[in-house]
Image 1 (cartoon, one colour):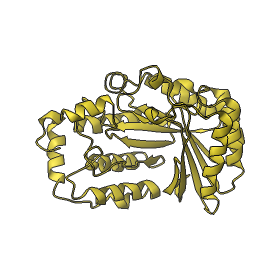
Image 2 (cartoon, helix red, strand yellow; image 1 turned 90 degrees about the vertical axis):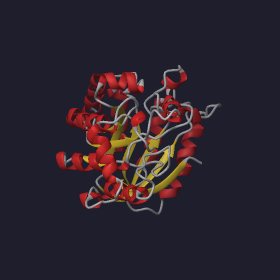
Image 3 (cartoon, helix red, strand yellow; image 1 turned 30 degrees about the vertical axis):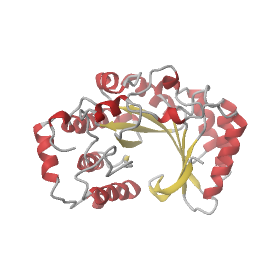
Image 4 (cartoon, helix red, strand yellow; image 1 turned 135 degrees about the vertical axis):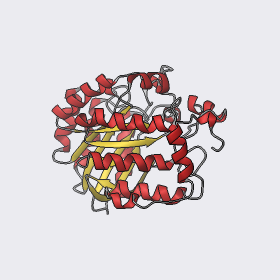
Length: 322
C-alpha cells in the first residue's frame, strides 16, 4: 500500500503527516511523451486504472492510520495532478475531501497540481469543504527561470502560468505551496543554488510554503543517462543547508521545507558519505520545527571541497569526486 506516516510540520507546528499516493493514471504530460526530464513517478502508476469508487475506498483505508494521532497533515499525491479530471473526477475529489473533513485531528491538507490545471471553481469547492483547515495546493514551479524550466526540465509551463494559478488558488480560499528543484541538469552547484534563491525571490509574493526538492536520480530519465556518463552529480547537502538558512532568514514568515530523499546514496543528495546522515537529520529537524538552530554549527572536513566547487563554479564533468 502506498501510504505512510512520519513526523512533519503541520500548519506551522510539529505533528504527523499522512502521505497517500493515489492509484490514478498519472501525469498527462508523461502519457503524451512529454515528461519532465527528472521524473519517473508516473511510470509507477497502475497499468490498469482503478475506478473512482475504488480510489475513495483506498483513501478510507489510509485514514485509519491517523485515527489515534493528535495533529495531522494529509498530503495527497497522484504522480500527476489532483485537479486533472482525467485522473480524478470532480465528484471523487469532493468525496475525498468530505472524508478528510470528518476528522477533527486533520489540521492541514495538501494536494498537487500543475499550473495549467488550476481552476477557480475546482479549488473553491474543495476549500469550502476543508473550511478552516490549512489547505494548500502544491505547484511544481521548479524554477522561476523559463529558460531553465524549458531546457533543463522540460516543464511545459512558465512562471507566468504559475502566477496566474497562484492568484486563482488564493482567490478561491486556499494557500500555495511552491516546489523548487535544486540543481537541474546543465547547472553547476553554484548556479543551482543561485537559481533557487532567485526563484524564491520571484515566487515569494505568490507563495505561502516553499518546498526545496533536492534532485535525485530516478530510473529511466534523462537525468539518469547524464548521471551514468558522470556528467551530472546530485546536489551536495551543504547546498541545501545554505539555501534553507538563507531562505528562512530572508523570508521568516514563509514555511520553508525540504525532505532529503535518498540522502547519502550516489543517486541522492550527498556530501562525502561520512557526514550525510548528520546533515540530512539536521535538514529534517529544521523542516519539522522551522528552527534555524538545527542548521547552525554544522561542520565536517568535506565542507572545504564543497566551498571550492561553489566558489569556482565548477561543472560536474570537471569534478574529481562524485
